[in-house]
Length: 494
Image (tube, rainbow, N blue to C red; front, side, top):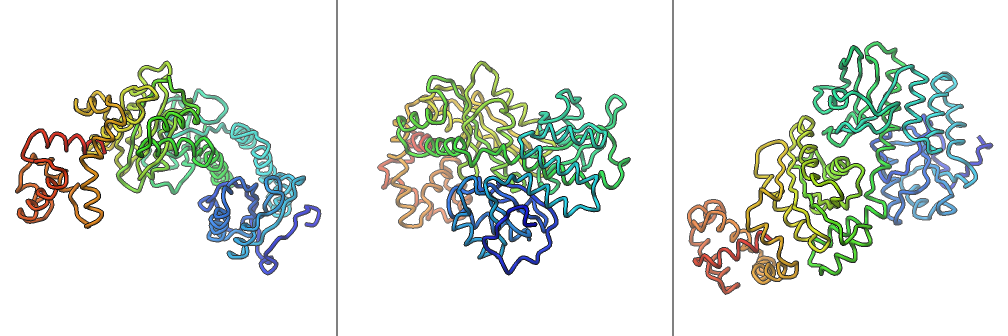
């Protein structure tokens, strides 16, 4: 197909591969959306460092794609690291010059491939063309309506209509996805039948997924119409991935802000980074901390869920050690914590075997962010001790000492924690000891030697030696109530 103007960069020995279809992607790891034989087009938007090329190409190799074609618009030509990765993984690499539109490549190749499916080809080519030209999901769903004669919507797990012919989809339909025992799921409302399909049929949890709603019963469809669902779901998956801000400049700045708040950084450094993210120092904020207790809900998915709950706002959100931390400006909404609480509880039917634990702080200004985050994390730990599938603890449920600590200046709290606990941390690191955990357990059982030794699986004499070492390193006496309280507060500030 010389008229396309594609130029082979590398892979001369791999040109006897069968091309099944054409896919356009700028995801760093698109493997889950590929099934083999695809001719992959990319604008290289995923490449932020040379190492990304190997990540991207290795995902293509695992998916057994036919070839890769890279556009010139961003770098002028294929970067050397991309060429090297294609040679390493034996993926043919083509160059798409800047004046050649991806839509032209897609249409030309698919016309050659689909001589036996002319009717389907028209719709699929139009779908690709409209996506590339920025028409978005609404134009694709309009195409489905015109072609198949049935209305279709894309809806988030929490019931927000993402795209469709109207935004007035009935509430029972919007809320049925999480509770449906199996998918596809058919329900009837006002004598109209609807069919629900998951966008990601292999997802272990539905709470971060989007789903498709068709205004008809899929059991009445011919086989070729059912086959279209996988194609449409793949398009929606790509569109959903475009909304993932983790690799955008704003997403990276928000992640850095959260990491800074959780570090030993000075308040002035936090304030300066806050301004870079576009958040105002004079605004009032809530902090939210959330975790899931099983691999069925990954931190990235939980992050997406919180963003969906706060759709219409621009929170700063990051993930640190599996815990999702979020800061959101209150604005005029005085009951934002109620909104978050209700939305988390609404997720319960879709959790399966997972449990969500969420903590919400009280409102603070920009200078109190660290205290708010610590308050939310403490509330989240309290929520994790409960047994419900979804558990939310708000600031008004916290013990009085945590509310008091949250109001103390950042530097004072940091110095208090460092002075008491750093000698124990250093000793633990140098001697592979467990003094911090021993201290925490000892205080949890109110100083009971027998209970503490049982929980730590050590002899009471070993426990006495550890407590003596703690007292020597800190010049404190754990038989005194005042010193026990100080240690308890220092541990709560971690």
